[in-house]
Amino acid sequence: MIKIDITSDKDFVLFVDPENDIIYNINNKELGDTRDGVLSDWILQLLTKTWININMLYELATIISNKFPTNSIDWHSTFYIVEKKFYLEQTGEILLPNSESGFQTLFNIIEYGRNENNDETNLAIEEIVNKRLANYNLK
Image 1: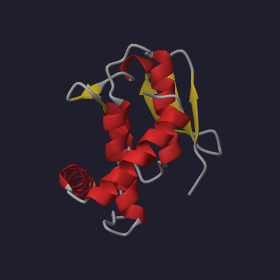
Image 2: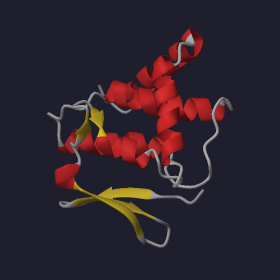
Image 3: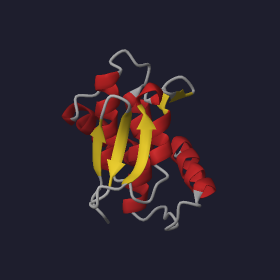
Image 4: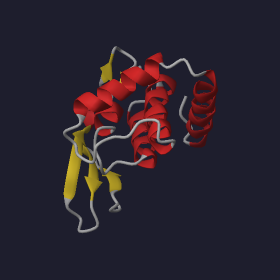
Protein backbone atom coordinates (compact mmCIF):
# COMPACT_ATOMS: atom_id res chain seq x y z
CA MET A 1 0.00 0.00 0.00
CA ILE A 2 1.36 3.42 -0.93
CA LYS A 3 1.84 6.05 1.73
CA ILE A 4 -0.72 8.82 1.49
CA ASP A 5 -0.32 12.07 3.42
CA ILE A 6 -3.24 14.25 4.43
CA THR A 7 -2.70 17.98 4.38
CA SER A 8 -5.04 20.88 4.61
CA ASP A 9 -4.98 24.48 3.56
CA LYS A 10 -7.54 27.27 3.78
CA ASP A 11 -9.68 25.76 1.00
CA PHE A 12 -9.13 21.99 0.84
CA VAL A 13 -8.13 18.82 2.60
CA LEU A 14 -5.72 17.05 0.26
CA PHE A 15 -4.69 13.41 0.04
CA VAL A 16 -1.22 13.39 -1.49
CA ASP A 17 0.87 10.47 -2.75
CA PRO A 18 4.69 10.16 -2.37
CA GLU A 19 5.23 12.09 -5.64
CA ASN A 20 3.17 14.97 -4.24
CA ASP A 21 0.33 14.23 -6.64
CA ILE A 22 -3.11 14.98 -5.25
CA ILE A 23 -5.15 11.80 -5.43
CA TYR A 24 -8.22 13.13 -3.62
CA ASN A 25 -9.45 16.45 -2.27
CA ILE A 26 -12.33 17.72 -0.20
CA ASN A 27 -13.52 21.30 -0.14
CA ASN A 28 -13.32 22.58 3.44
CA LYS A 29 -16.83 24.00 3.12
CA GLU A 30 -18.17 20.44 2.69
CA LEU A 31 -16.27 18.76 5.52
CA GLY A 32 -19.24 18.83 7.89
CA ASP A 33 -21.61 17.11 5.43
CA THR A 34 -23.59 14.28 6.98
CA ARG A 35 -25.78 11.34 6.08
CA ASP A 36 -28.93 10.93 8.11
CA GLY A 37 -27.89 14.07 9.99
CA VAL A 38 -25.25 12.31 12.10
CA LEU A 39 -22.88 10.17 10.01
CA SER A 40 -19.85 11.81 8.39
CA ASP A 41 -20.48 11.74 4.66
CA TRP A 42 -16.76 12.05 3.84
CA ILE A 43 -15.63 9.29 6.17
CA LEU A 44 -18.20 6.93 4.64
CA GLN A 45 -17.31 7.98 1.08
CA LEU A 46 -13.61 7.42 1.70
CA LEU A 47 -14.35 4.05 3.26
CA THR A 48 -15.02 2.80 -0.28
CA LYS A 49 -11.51 3.68 -1.51
CA THR A 50 -9.02 0.84 -1.74
CA TRP A 51 -6.11 3.13 -0.82
CA ILE A 52 -7.62 4.38 2.44
CA ASN A 53 -6.64 3.02 5.82
CA ILE A 54 -8.30 3.40 9.17
CA ASN A 55 -5.73 5.84 10.55
CA MET A 56 -6.32 8.21 7.62
CA LEU A 57 -10.05 8.18 8.39
CA TYR A 58 -9.42 9.10 12.02
CA GLU A 59 -6.95 11.76 10.91
CA LEU A 60 -9.60 13.24 8.60
CA ALA A 61 -12.13 13.15 11.44
CA THR A 62 -9.70 15.14 13.58
CA ILE A 63 -9.32 17.71 10.80
CA ILE A 64 -13.11 17.95 10.45
CA SER A 65 -13.52 18.33 14.19
CA ASN A 66 -10.87 21.05 14.35
CA LYS A 67 -12.25 23.01 11.38
CA PHE A 68 -15.90 22.55 12.42
CA PRO A 69 -15.96 22.12 16.21
CA THR A 70 -19.75 22.53 16.34
CA ASN A 71 -20.46 19.91 13.65
CA SER A 72 -23.38 17.53 14.15
CA ILE A 73 -21.39 14.40 13.34
CA ASP A 74 -21.78 11.49 15.71
CA TRP A 75 -18.24 10.11 15.63
CA HIS A 76 -19.16 7.00 17.55
CA SER A 77 -21.88 5.98 15.08
CA THR A 78 -19.69 6.87 12.09
CA PHE A 79 -16.68 4.94 13.30
CA TYR A 80 -18.75 1.99 14.46
CA ILE A 81 -19.55 1.42 10.77
CA VAL A 82 -15.88 1.93 9.82
CA GLU A 83 -14.51 -0.34 12.52
CA LYS A 84 -17.11 -3.01 11.80
CA LYS A 85 -16.07 -3.12 8.14
CA PHE A 86 -12.36 -3.35 8.94
CA TYR A 87 -12.96 -5.87 11.74
CA LEU A 88 -15.04 -8.17 9.56
CA GLU A 89 -12.48 -7.93 6.74
CA GLN A 90 -9.59 -8.72 9.07
CA THR A 91 -11.32 -11.65 10.72
CA GLY A 92 -12.21 -13.03 7.29
CA GLU A 93 -15.93 -12.94 7.93
CA ILE A 94 -16.40 -10.69 4.90
CA LEU A 95 -14.03 -10.09 2.02
CA LEU A 96 -14.14 -7.05 -0.22
CA PRO A 97 -13.19 -7.16 -3.87
CA ASN A 98 -9.95 -5.38 -4.75
CA SER A 99 -11.62 -2.66 -6.76
CA GLU A 100 -13.45 0.55 -6.13
CA SER A 101 -16.36 -0.75 -8.19
CA GLY A 102 -17.60 -2.85 -5.27
CA PHE A 103 -20.02 -0.25 -3.93
CA GLN A 104 -22.95 -2.64 -3.67
CA THR A 105 -20.80 -5.12 -1.81
CA LEU A 106 -19.61 -2.43 0.59
CA PHE A 107 -23.11 -1.23 1.33
CA ASN A 108 -24.19 -4.84 1.87
CA ILE A 109 -21.36 -5.15 4.39
CA ILE A 110 -22.46 -2.01 6.19
CA GLU A 111 -26.02 -3.26 6.29
CA TYR A 112 -24.81 -6.64 7.53
CA GLY A 113 -22.77 -4.87 10.19
CA ARG A 114 -25.74 -2.85 11.37
CA ASN A 115 -27.95 -5.91 11.57
CA GLU A 116 -25.48 -8.45 12.92
CA ASN A 117 -26.47 -9.83 16.31
CA ASN A 118 -23.15 -11.28 17.39
CA ASP A 119 -22.79 -9.75 20.84
CA GLU A 120 -19.13 -10.75 21.18
CA THR A 121 -18.18 -9.09 17.90
CA ASN A 122 -20.25 -6.01 18.66
CA LEU A 123 -18.65 -5.66 22.10
CA ALA A 124 -15.15 -5.98 20.60
CA ILE A 125 -15.97 -3.31 18.02
CA GLU A 126 -17.46 -1.00 20.69
CA GLU A 127 -14.21 -1.27 22.66
CA ILE A 128 -12.12 -0.52 19.56
CA VAL A 129 -14.24 2.50 18.66
CA ASN A 130 -14.16 3.94 22.18
CA LYS A 131 -10.40 3.47 22.47
CA ARG A 132 -9.60 5.03 19.09
CA LEU A 133 -12.00 7.95 19.57
CA ALA A 134 -10.26 8.70 22.87
CA ASN A 135 -6.82 8.40 21.22
CA TYR A 136 -7.83 10.92 18.56
CA ASN A 137 -9.72 13.17 21.02
CA LEU A 138 -13.01 12.68 19.20
CA LYS A 139 -16.34 12.38 20.96
